[in-house]
Image (cartoon, rainbow, N blue to C red; front, side, top):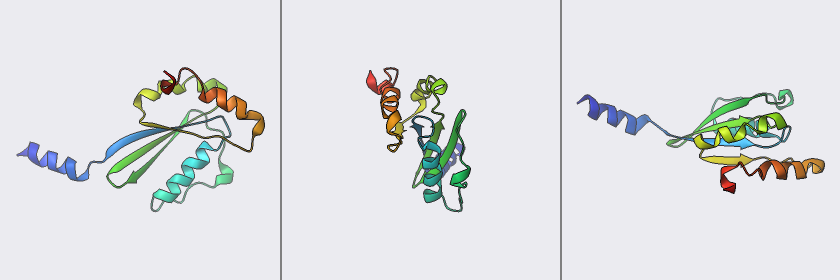
Length: 124
């Protein structure tokens, strides 16, 4: 009986979880994108002041519930030293959002090289 009730409870209340990586060079706007997304899709979330956002060292995690799905966004730091760690997160992710600062024309080539890294799983 417990198993039946437990299964029913999980079916009704448990959400499917999906992990989405947010990648891009430093200062590309990854954390701003995450904060804007959380503000738009989460009730009662006021968000942080966008002018107070600083460079991400490590990662930021944001969670959004959409219907019966829970989206977990992992905003990974984009500094060159941290880019080598990106591939450690791929196995756990279901999707990738790659943010490009199109106004920073001097770094577009650098962004292309970071995204074109042969260690990325979608390049194999």
